[in-house]
Length: 317
Length: 305
Picture 1 (cartoon, each protein chain N blue to C red):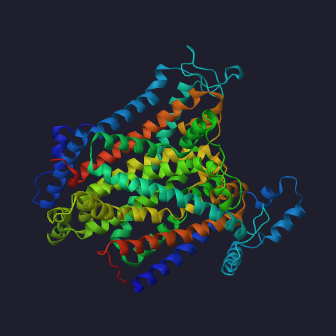
Picture 2: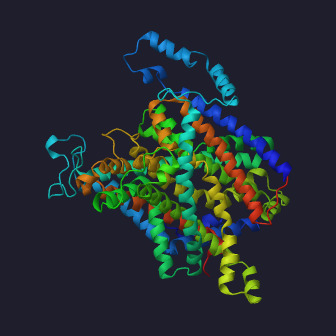
Picture 3: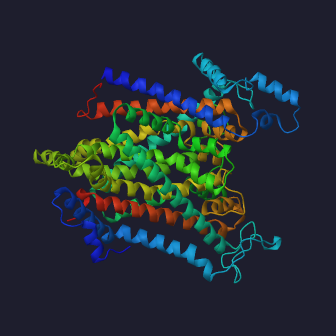
């Protein structure tokens, strides 16, 4: 296990460095100068020169990359061109909001879709299964932005039940004080995630139900409820672990659409605005964070797999 | 797509004493029969065929002006002249749907084609060569995959001015990674199969093993993935349009139409929203159903017999 972990972490460091190089090259491929797009078309040549000198943009690319990497290892992610605040401060404000929004919606979606998938598998091709399958399938194929807008139009504009905007306070505690405003963004995320999870859960549970060990369980007199809850549910859950692990980097940009529609001030919205404004330090910082989270998510999923499934053993090559 | 009798024979090939080969072909043929007998496949193929006829044959019967507009014809409700009204630029909605459908289909097929070819080659090379080369090639893919897709998309779309060609290229660059990984995994698992070993024992060279045994057996996974990537590309373009990074007005596709229509969601111009939405969703459902059906028909375990 230790040898496996060391090898995986070695690979992970390589991937994170690769992510940094890739983003660096990509954003510098952009035509025109950053200074122009930040300072506006009326900026004088000297202002542009000062801007470039301040942010080190007048140096050759490899040197800029070296400076950036150097700063990152000293814990400095740079300063946002537009907001004139350290990128780390901005992330520290936004990230908890995303952990809250995506964390709660993922947990709710799992709590609903895991038993639902087992139920569908047991009652395969029955009326309830067909109804649930076609509903989740339609949801799955529907573009998220369209679905979210339909919810807004129904619950906020026509019925006046819920506000169309997420709470605008900066702290998570402040948001919880206005739970009604959280309902629509949560609902959108929960339903779209259920659509994704239940598809996997259903087919995974169908596979599990065909396993021989269930015969043994029933033969030794275990009740059907116990068979389903203890054996089918737990074993069908395994593929979902990987999917949840893979969705961890979604914290950086996965909810861009939902954040944009409900004006939820999270990482996704920050990134989207930074991309439109050519705010390089935020773009670099966010992709770097995304890379690190991807690596952590994959690793966590692998380790969880090893704990949940005793057949899985990791060996260092 | 019908398979006539001589074709099947050509497919199965002259009865060469290569047991693994015939076995594989018979299975593929059974898979095809399974596919056409599948309800999902029937529904999916019907949807896609109808959409195709609507988009490509429709303009022959339903003439509209999709180049010039008139300021007095903006957002007109459905009438005898414009059966589904006009949009916020003054274009006839049905004509626009046909035009937009052509673009959506074109984009979907182009992206699926490019990603399948590039991804398959890359994955196959990595899987067959193995060793350090494989490790390095896979780390490149890991790097791309470590940046969330939409994030990478936002950065790249900002760099290149969106045109149909550039969007096709960007979406392809972002989606070949999954195919490459899949094909590599498939090649790695196929490499150790008994029939590959048997073919090698009988003196089959690497090239023969690749073309006659590995490619046909990995084909199922590749086709399933290609079908889904058509749907994914169409959705991705729609999402980009919604974020305001799609292609500018004279151009049309269902996603762009839908996001333009959503701007007027609260003005009651339903004919600008629901028609493109329904066509978009139906098309994605159609392709997903076909993909599911192909997968089911290739998976021996799931056959109901």
